[in-house]
Image (cartoon, rainbow, N blue to C red; front, top):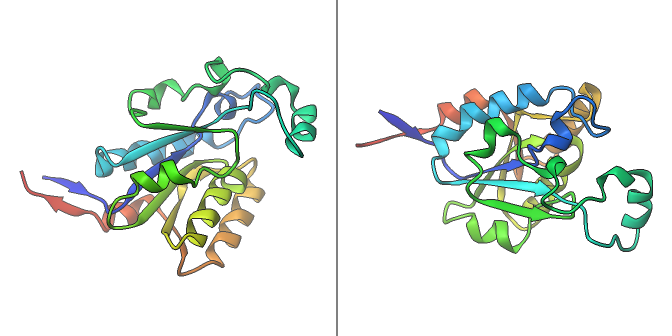
Length: 189
């Protein structure tokens, strides 16, 4: 018997630029987050969206200063660094690209579905996951952040981001993979 978790699993930015150890944006615990994501995927079946952080063609406003500090990232959307990592690429059937940290917007909202629960996993907890969670919560969406399927820029930043996110209860709840899977319902065949 298979199980089905409630909500839309949104896998934030599981891309090479955050996975590869020699990248300036590497998340040291990326592999652990990927392991958590792999455990979650079967419970969500087709209710999975991957996101990709991509650089804008021409940075505007404060983004100019950001890319002055990270010029290596000014690459087109099809560049290798923006690709979803190989181990998850086959599962990335639905992908939303955005040149912003937060991925909440009309595209993601349209995919949410009737139960209105957004389940977040990915990187970086202290940047794109945090930005997505807070924007969705402000829109009235129930948000679950799966702590052991996320990774931060470092352990301290990850822990601090989870602490801040947990302050937003009941709009945002920090949970574990086991808790999400434990709430899954059997799907009759």
